[in-house]
Length: 197
Image (cartoon, rainbow, N blue to C red; front, side):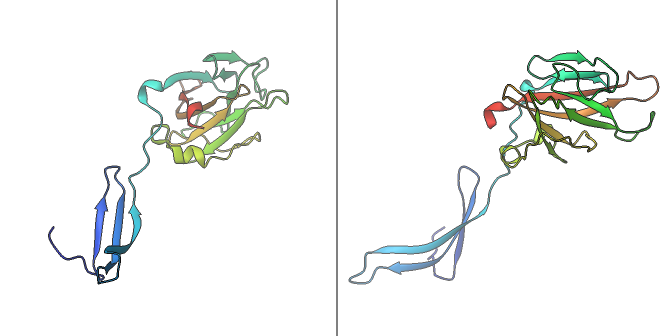
């Protein structure tokens, strides 16, 4: 574009990375005694959305029974609760409590992490952040807690779990199987995202 760039003009430039910058308020310094430069202001006006960090090939799927089973993320093993409805299943990182009246089509799964004082599990609940759209920004802004979060775990939510071993997993895409004729389980996807923390 062969056009003089005046002080009152603005040019938008998209970089190879996808960022868009605005350049304007140009001031030429080309008179005798000046340094033959152009001074200008610039600002970032838009960036591409962050890329998802969970690749399809890194996702695993599992199912556990409401209340009666827990899951160990490190080994991918289902753990049986010693007693029905106990808050922890030995060796498990989490279980699903049933927060509703059976049967119902509402979302009833609530993820409860292991509360063992010797090896507490930390969680961060990301409301309306899907597992397939989870970004580095989501992970960086997550707040972990050892306290229980009594919020329904919907398909569109993601929970980050930091295990006692220090690894972090993302859990999402939950699907309840609690209607008559089903096996009273929750199916979910999970992926190790430790490298992103």
